[in-house]
Length: 510
Image 1 (cartoon, helix red, strand yellow):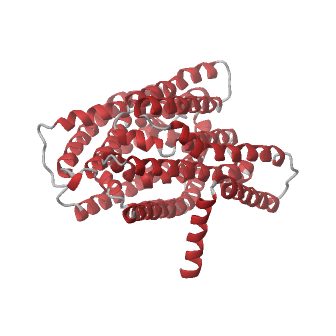
Image 2 (cartoon, one colour):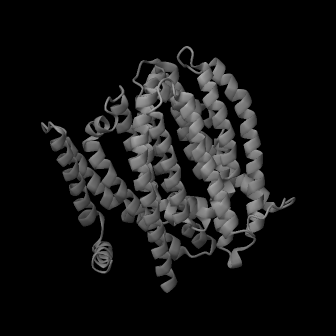
Image 3 (spheres, one colour):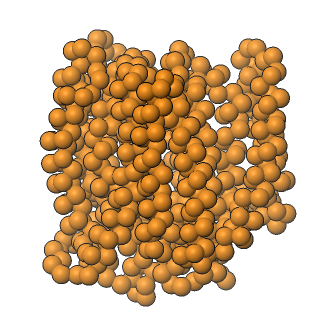
């Protein structure tokens, strides 16, 4: 019992570290993205994002392998005496080198061809697009090679260290942006070149920590024959398929919007995805903090432990999303105007859709990590891949019929809802997971709150609010109302008691 309490405290501590990182990086990031949008203009901001999106067509390979690396390192740690981590690490590192070479080759052939022949950019900006693209290729490959080292930090739950790295990286970006405000003229290339400093810092910091904490694990050794090559490649194959579909959906939507509407609308879409990324990070931190223990508990056949974590992570993640979703939704246009000043056309509709996407995504709390930890991912990845990929051809048809740019995001919402329903069925069939209890523990109370708050938003949207003060207090009231329902509808009495006890302890004992 004492060990379980200690593990729960570690999850809580890791979550705190992640949220400190998120809060600081969000504040800095919001200012940075607003300033960059002002400095570059909406068209160049869109060019920056859509050019990176072209490279995104190939980075799905590394993303799939990265998930496999974290899973196999965690699984090895769940064995008695941690198994042979050095061997697993070197197998993963070898595969990452191979993937980096493949991404570089594809990027310098297919990617370059697409940039020159199909990317819809303003006249005179083709060379700028290629400059951005070439720098992105180099640092993407460096990041891929660094993957197994970062995987060790996550596996050993070094969330404080990763928090510090992220905050410093974001601060470097902030300093770059502040410096650019004093530079006149066209600064697109200068911004891209200076932004590489954040990648260099992250690479060096992660390398140092990995060699400092686990010198024996990261000793380089080429492993010639090992069955885990096949296991990791097989696992990565399904991961890659799922990641490819998600990447194709993201990059494909970028390219479709670029094809039909141009870089200015790409800029509005990029702003919406910034909002989506910040909010999604806010709610996904419960998963990130608990993931290592879910995998290790599954590896050690401790069903009671991983079920407990899954239910708590799923419920708290969903409730955390509600705290972010409804206040933002109530005053989204006002927040965008405060943040950006001049809000690009279509940004509001894009942001409304992306927030809804994150709300649906938050219903997967705990189960995604459980699926990955089990290793039985085949049918889960196939069903998600099919639904994600279908969005692009259907979106193309909608655009050809004259539908607005944000309509493709409505498709994403529909696909994500269907994907969650199928996922729950597969959990029962493949992993014998008690889906009924999960729905009862994780969904019922948050769904009640969602219904109440949507009725509230219906009334709130018809109030004649005018002026910053009214909008500010409207936002605060909506947050407090959501918090009230989260505490007294979303949480059980024993869960509230735990939260109150923690607060009292902090207040009276520091």
